[in-house]
Amino acid sequence: MTLNGLLALSRQRIGSLALVIVLSVMAALGAVAALPVTYTAKAVGYMRVYVPDNVADTTDSYYVATQLASRKIDAVIPVFTSETVGQRVVDSLGLDETASQIARSLTATHAENTATVVVTAKASSPQSARRVADEAIVQSAQEVRELEGDRYPGEIVLMSSSELSEVTRSPSSIRFVAFGAFGGLVLAYIWIILREVTDNTVRGVDDLRAAGDLTALGAVPYSSSISRVGAGGTAAPAVEEAMRRLRINVLHGGGSGGSLIVTSPAAADGRTTVAARLARVFSLAGARVVLVDGDLRAPALAETFGVDADASGLSQLLAGEVSVDEVMTEASIPGLEFIPAGRTLSNPSELLASSRMAALIAELEADRIVVIDSPPVLDYADAAIMAERAGGVLLVARAGRTTVNDLQEAILAIEQGGGTVAGVVLNRVSSRWRRRPFGAVHSEAPGGGRRERR
Image (cartoon, rainbow, N blue to C red; front, side):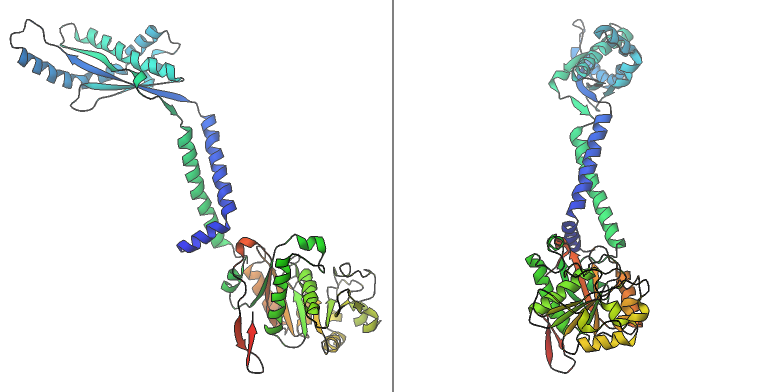
């Protein structure tokens, strides 16, 4: 994945990135709240040497004492963290902890070629940590004096009180939050990259083009206005413009004849809405259009056009019970006519495969554009059966749900049935997955010359 691709993916998945980071930060804050809090204070002791006044050569004696102190401090480091000193600190400060607990809370370090020792103490409060650190040096000095005797020319003194240094808190809220945010960012990118690699759903036009030799005829943006106005009403401007682009591309995008099957790989992909809106924009452009509800299993267009669900329709027409004029209904849009599904059937394949269906399509497309809504092609054979008799098939894919495999299987089923796939339209495309609009692409028309495909 290139840097530009990663940046584009970040913009597209910004919500997921933010969610994982926020959850990681909250987990870090939870860990901070759950872990016991300790405070660490630091004090510095110094090994002071002195030379007795009655020594004749004080210079040599002072040098020897200084060298001895520098070496000796390493030897007395264990004294600072001993339980003996711990007991001294407990007795001196009147603490409730045991000598062993105090000893474990102390650390002592000594830098080479120095006469200082750094003592750190951990406690449940800043004040206790400071008191223990200072007192540990004082009591260690007393212990060393008793161990070495009065003749030892050195003494440990408190050089820098813990009051002069900053007390640190553990665990650190800032560090935990920073680590949580960084860890969340890493986990989020791992997650979205893995999801991107393993996810083969079609979310945008670029995904459709990358899926293979699929003709993208349009992309209908997601809009809540469709649910408010229904499949036949005026929707948001973006939806209307997308349908006009689709109309142009369908007219010049392949297939032959004046009939078009609108289907989808699976249910709830929006094929019925696309079929109704496509018929609507055709009629608004001045064409004579007939919309046929070819879903004889679960018809959904009758309510859209104000037709009684029990009215006669395609099923009765194919059964020879009624004529075309008896089932044809004028829509409110000039030039648009509608044929309802009529009586629902459990297995309408025989009727759709009959010569009456072929004759009906031929009759209607003689002077009209015929748009036929059909059941999903992967669930039923109806679309593949009708596709052989129609000029082309428009596949409706739902962005973020329809997979590349679904599309390829649907195309194969239609082609095996003798139909021709005119192209694919993406429905309910999120704004974050939309790319540039379909540009003008020229291709050779079947009869020669050039035609414009938008």
